Amino acid sequence: MARTSGNTPTRLPAFVVGAQRAPRPLVSPEHVKGHLRLLKTFHNLRITVEDCKDRRIPEYAMQMDKDARWRWFVHLAVERFERWVNSLQFVPLEKFVTAHIPPLDVWMVWHAYLLNPCWYAEDCERLAVLQQLRLLNTFVVGSINIGKVVKLKPSNTRAEDWHKKTGTPFNPFEAMTVTEDTFKQLECPRCRTLVYVPFVNNDGTGFAEGKFSVMCPLPGCRLKVTHNNLAVAKFVRDLSEGDDEAQEHFVASVLICVSTGVFYLCFTAACSGSLFAPSGKRDARHAKVIRDQLMQSAYFAGLRPSALNERLVRLDRIKEIKEIIGYSLEQLKEAISTSLRNCSTASVTRILSAYTNGSPFSIDLVDAVLRQCQFTAQMDELGWLKSGVFRETTKREILEHSVMRYHAFLDLMTAYPNSMLVPTLDIDLVWHTHQLMASRYGVDCEMYVGQCVDHELSVTESRLCSAFDDTCRIWQARFQGSYMQCGCPVPDENSVHKFVRIFRNYIRCRSQIQVDLHPEHLPATHPSAHNALLTFETTCTGTFGKMHHTHGKRKENQSCPSTTHRPERTYIKSERATQLDLDRLPPMHSPAMPVRFEKELPAPPIPSPYSKRG
Image (tube, rainbow, N blue to C red):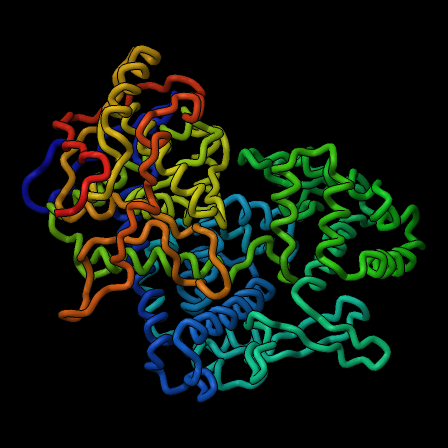
């Protein structure tokens, strides 16, 4: 890459992803800088809550440990996000930025939602409550430069408008002082009576706690409400919706009503997890086939009315189905699996994963936020959240090279579309920044990769280790350079070189992404693993992929919990690990065009296998 003198930014080269050449980077360093500013505000908010730096935090919350207190706060934020999307009205972008930007805690939830692009895109088509948010997706690209705006004190008009529409104060810490805002409103799955339950209570059965349960107050019902039977009610409700008298045909996100001939935006009647195939391809026909199979099965056949006057009968049938299933999530899963026995296991698994609680959204937004907290903490440990850290020209190269590596990562996806590729921290940061562009991200993925590229959730550590092992190998083979340069062990060098020779003969070309990385960039080539499987007890912790570098602030003689290095857990020394099994590598889809840059620099040396840090 050619450099320029002074503060003039380096001109980024054209990028080749698969068979396509992007005329300009899909993500710019300025976009990444804006995203880092936003992450810094999220990080500061978390510190404020965990360390009780705001006096408006209730006394009972101060008695919690910091992880439980943060999880409680995130639950409140998700509730406020749901109120916000219910109150949204479409306004021009400039008016939205100046007068309708939500509070920081709501932004944090929206940010985490956007970083699950396939689920987010599907919900925006499927859920009526997200239709106004869907119209804003085209403009979300402006949100990544919002780091400065969200820190500004809102005007009285903006705060009053928010309170009027959502019924809760604009400031999340003020909302904590309102009793109604510390309770969750639910609907009993059996009798539909409104139930109010605190997010936390003395016996650990609050909505934000691991043993959540509450008794329906109606004397004739008295159902014990749990996350499981709320999930059952959610599924039956999703399956029964969309059978209005207007006959609708779905075409390219626009519906035409046959009876009126009027075009309008509307939601697609589909179950969670069915609109996007496991491969990332959007397939409305596939969603309709799944829905029809469910509606025609013996379990759910009574949900579709044959005439308008039978809608009340259908409501009774909905209750009957839930009674037959016994409000049991396990029985529901069995019924779904039986009804969809002709569908792929991956499709069924994806649908089932969307029904774990009563939230209207397909993913658990609380867990989504907590996962991003782990990634943000790693950015802070790298020192990338400090103000002005990338103002210097030499430091700017860190972001430019990260952008380069992300485009090469996309190119790798075109060659191995069925493989799970694990990004490094620098690549993951740029990837997240791209995902914040919502609609534009989807268009870019379709154009250059051929499908919507999603972040897979809840991956086991063993699978992440194996997938990262493969990612290192195929990156080395495709680009003749080391994927990870942070000093951690890499797969066996001799085996990689052997595979490179075979691979070169196969593709008959040489692709290179050889650049000298800035010394402060090297720790960011550590694997990113914020999508590792989390449990309630370990929401913001985890073991796989923890950084063992000494970057970030730390008191003298104080050990950092995230610096524990466990090479035996990441790369197991075994005959299978040291002898490259070519059959275990994912098959290549098609030889892509070489990825070349304006100046090819010598590749950095590859560390010895299982080498110890000096």
